Image 1 (tube, one colour):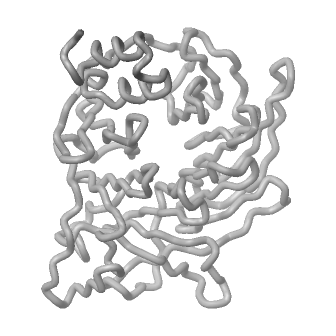
Image 2 (cartoon, helix red, strand yellow):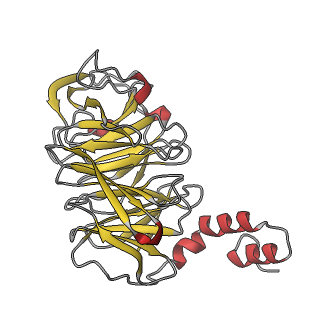
Amino acid sequence: MPAEGTRMARLWEREVGRLPPRRFAGAVRASEEFVHSLGLQKRLQKHKRCVDTLSFNSSGSLFMSASHDQTIALWNLEEAVPRLMFQAGGDVSDTQFMPLSDDRSIVTCGADGEVRHSRIREGGCVFTDKLADLRYAVNKLAVDPGSPHTFFSCVEDGSVLLFDLRRKYPRKLFKCGAVRRFGFLSGRTVILPAISVDPRNPSCFAVCGCDEYARLYDARKISLEISTFGVPVEQFCPQHLVSSDSKRDGISGLAFSHAGELLASYSYENIYLFSREHGLYFNDFEENYSEKLPVPQTFKGHENMQPIKGVSFFGPNCDYVISGSDCGHVFIWRKKDGQLLRAM
């Protein structure tokens, strides 16, 4: 029998019936052996200009790419050519499969301020409708993982919109206000590059912008009758960056884990992992006092200064953190202790 805990041992356990196939697949993909075995498998070449965004369907069997050439391609992982390729109808900065739609419902947004809905019919015919045409760039979308109809978007003017494909117009939830000093809004808005939905509670979502704070909102508690600016239910920030004087600070990417932890990738800084106990409100934190916030897990080594980069969890149980870097490498860290495992 192979050494206990190795990938070969788990393969042996599967073959003799001790490890069900689903648990075997999860165990292999969660192992550090698997992380170290990753490498370039295929080079998929079809777009004529830079690829702006990639997204997978819920099962991971299909992924979608959108390019600056205004085309969208759907790829099967076993094939080196697109299963389907169609015109996006405009600029694309983000594209997402709508859940529970048999991968036939796709939403996109772009720097041209448009949000579009594309429906794939039998035979590969694609019909695209314009859902919104805004004055500012729409940077990111975040879908409700349990609904084929609803998703959020964040806009460069600080607005957050809620879309429902059953309705004609989106609902503007609020504008994100800049923080002059922790707890006080300055009256200015924050450019929003990213938004992410908590998969455990899809009414809760986080946004980030060109300051130090990751803000958590609950769509059920937002009322425009109170203020133009939305009031977050929680905010996150490493203590050394609270009200930082640096003009370079800002968060370029966010991601929720299956357990509701929040990753935030800071420009010119590190990646941080926040959970409920790191919240500024949870800790009754006031910057004028000397209370110490719990220190979040930190992921170091990459560079995030030039193009905007996202950040993501990796593995069936979000065991790892993964990010691109200005140096051209893909960085993979172990989540539980922040140890850098790969720079591919």
